[in-house]
Length: 407
Image 1 (cartoon, one colour):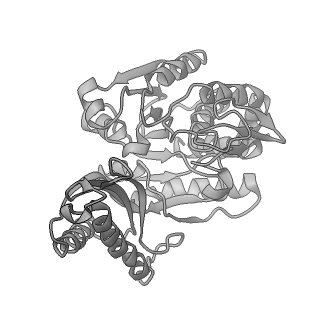
Image 2 (cartoon, helix red, strand yellow; image 1 turned 30 degrees about the horizontal axis):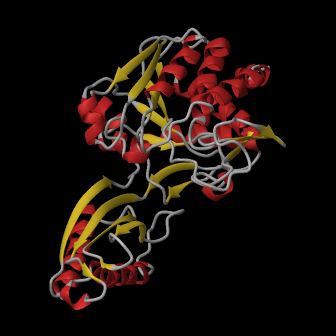
């Protein structure tokens, strides 16, 4: 057998152990919010240490975590140094949106049925804690590299923008690899993605008794006018087309609305949160300024209404760097061999932490264990699941890719 076949065989021989490792990771909840994620980091560190890995625990100061809207964050770094040469970093995130309703399986059970593993983060992206850890174990057991190094990075704030995860670690110079791969799906290597602007809009009117509504100023009616103006933008956005394959056009979503005090009271205050996805060609500063002006102008036309607009998140689009070609070529070559079909390089409408690395000049791509689409994975929906064969094959692709990158 050649080296690639030996890597595959090692992964096959240890796959039951890999699945048990993933089950243990799924069984520790990481709902974000509220974002009390240090307990999961502690458990993940124990499991990694069982493999003989030395695990660095980087706890972010409480004040910074609270400012980010979370409770506790401990980032994990595992450094495997083989010799002089490039450092390749593999990053997966453990934070997840809360399970929500409609599950037929336990959200944190890690149950296996019909070749699938179920649970929140089974597909996005605790699965890639497993993909990356076992790819490195296979690499060291079979290829025994003597050049370069690999770093495993497991973080816990991707859902909130990565500011106390990768951004914090880069800022404090705890990590600075030459190349990086982040959690993704198995059937494509992602080289670009949308940006995301999230804002909270608070509309102020004047409360009044519902029996004398003219004595108040209805903040909910005003909010309705503002929302209508915002939703009209979605029609306009359909006329803006991205040149990146896999990305279509910008769009806007209103995710939450809160307001009013009682049924018999004219609402004096209403707040809503919006999510504006930006294609790579858009300028985030211009997008935000345009939205703020639209909201302000609409409110100005309604007597007695004032608005506050607060930015919650600004995640810039991922723009591919020229240095990512070795990553793309290796993943495509081995992906086609392992999966038996071409692995395209394209963009995705999601946003990820990879943009933070590329902003720091570190070429990166998105690749890991998962189905062809987010919809198939049930990510952020009930009964999130992962085909175990996708996990097995993606681990082989990553192990082979590392073998190439480290010479």
